Length: 482
Image (cartoon, rainbow, N blue to C red; front, side, top):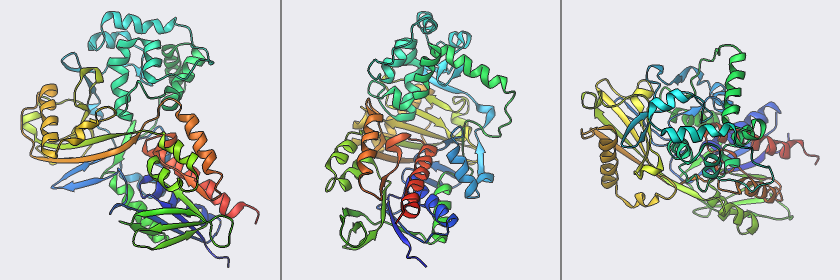
C-alpha cells in the first residue's frame, strides 16, 4: 500500500476545518491514503465563530447566521447531519429598521438586491426626502457606464446610479453591516459584481431589479423551507463542534494552542517539499500545505521564499470590529424594541454599526422574561473604539441603545468580544490583487491559500473556497502523473 500523503492545514477556522473535511471526503472516495494535520494557534477551533451558553442564553461572539442563497453552508450542514438543527428567523418579527434623522424608521419594502423598487414604501418610511426619491428614480434614464472606465468604489457606483442621499441613507448602512468597511474604499466589482452586471445588462439598477423580481414570479411560488438567513438551534458553535468530531473520527490530527513559527519550502532536494516549524521546536513535514489564515498572517509565512506574494497579501487591508451582547429584563424593553434590529448609517456619526434583537430574531436565544440584544461596533475608520476597556465600551453601546431605541434599563448580563483585524476589505483593485496572489502561490506546487480574504467573506463563501482548494489539492496529490 502506498504511503499516505501528508497535508498540513494552518488555521482552524471555518475555512481550515472545511478544507480538511472536503479533503478527507475526496481521499475516502478515491481510497487514497492521507495524513492530515490542522494547526490552530488559539486554544479553540472556529476562528470568529464562537457560541457561549449561559443560564439559558445562547450568545454569538462573531457571526450569528449564514445566507441560504449560497448553497455551500446548507450542503455542509447536511453532510454533517445538522439539517434538522437549522432554524429560520421568526417570521412574525420580520422587520428591520434604520436610525435616520433622529429616530428609528422601518426599512422600506421593495428592496431587491439592495435596490429600491417601490416609491410608496420609500415615501412612508421617511428615510429619503422627496428630492432624494426623485433623484433615485433618475436611475431609469441615466446611461450605463462604459466598460472601459476605471473600477468604481461602492460609494461612486451607488451615488452615480441612485444619488448620494439614497446611497448614504439606504445602501451604505447595509454595506457597512456586511463588510464593516468604508464604501469610499470598497470595490463594487469585488463586493457586488451582480449589481455591476445588472447595469450592464439593463442599463439601470431599478430596471434590473424589477426584471429579477418578474423572473422569480414567473417560476411560481417558492416552496423553500428556508428564510434568507438560517442558524443552528444551539448556535453556530455546533457547526464547529460537529466538524471537529467528524475530523477526529477520520483520523485528522487537530492541534490547537500551537503556533506555527515558519513555513519552509525545501526546494528540489530529497524529502517532502514543505517543513512547518512549530513553537517549541517541533517540526512537521508535508507534501502540501494550505494556509487558511488571514492574509497578513499568510504573508509572513510566504515572505522568506516569495516576497511578491507576501507584498500582494499585505495589500489586503483589514478592519477591526466588536460585538457586545446585552441581556435586559423583558418588561423594561418590550414596548421599545421591534423586528430583527436596526442599522446605523455612517452619516449619523454613531458608534454603533448595527444592533440585533437576537431573542426576537431567533428562537430559544434567551429565557422567558429576558431579551437578548447584540450590538455591533467598530469597522473601517472607527478602530479607536478598541482602545476603550470593556466597561467604557459597554457604556458607550448602552448609551447608544438609549438614544436610538429608548432603552434606559441597565443590562442584567454583558459579554464583549473583540475582533482586531478581523474583516478583510475588498478595496479597489481587489480582484486583480487576488488573481496575482493565486498566480504567485501556484508557482509553489502543493501550496494553497484559502479564506475570507479572497473571494467572499461569508460562511458559505469560506466553505465554498475551502472545498475548491481541497479539490485542487487532491488533484495535485493523486491525479497528477508521477
